[in-house]
Length: 246
Ligand SMILES: Nc1ncnc2c1ncn2[C@@H]1O[C@H](COP(=O)(O)OP(=O)(O)O)[C@@H](O)[C@H]1O
Ligand SMILES: [Mg+2]
Image (cartoon, rainbow, N blue to C red; front, side, top):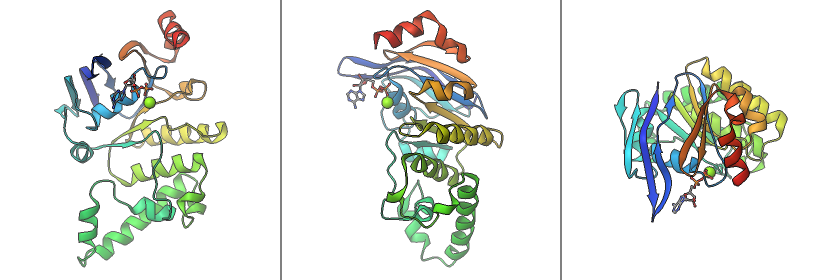
């Protein structure tokens, strides 16, 4: 397992948004977390990536305790996340967005004054080109990000995540606002990436599209894991019930 949580909890003034959640994320696979609105999916992501402090429980990455490390430290451990609403720098081109480091902009700017910068830069540009080509958006390389469609923005998010060397990519609703054909393409790319050493933990609402791609599924309801297993879990009565009740 690349990531494990043990009885992870997060409370908001009496609301048990996360209530003793234990999840295991297998290496080089797509693990899917589903559940109705308000079931705690985003809170889970925020808590494992350091955006929220856990009130109880533990998070382990590669066997190391990373509970409550701040986001930049979690990133340095090898976990990168995308957000429910993509936030590219709209006035920058796709390429410029790809080159925006996700960890420490200050360091990046300081590097600019070092001679080595030039090599670093051209290497990064080459890496960015390769990734944009892999994602089939190389024709957008010099377009301003504000001109991209919802689906293209999601691909840019994945591209930025791939620019880092993070092994675990955590995504919050990457298919929101993406047309079905492109959504399937994104998922096929994600599965390809799993074969090259990346691991994906994805929270998603659109079960119709994503379920077939998932290697492991966790279902959340009211802050708890209510079912886990293969894609057949959605047929369990407790899962049907939590969706009907939502
Ligand atoms: N920062 C916060 N402050 C207070 N309540 C929050 C906060 N974040 C999430 N919640 C609450 O926690 C519950 C779970 O929310 P969330 O994790 O966003 O659910 P999901 O992503 O599954 O839709 C909701 O009741 C939500 O209102
Ligand atoms: Mg959410």
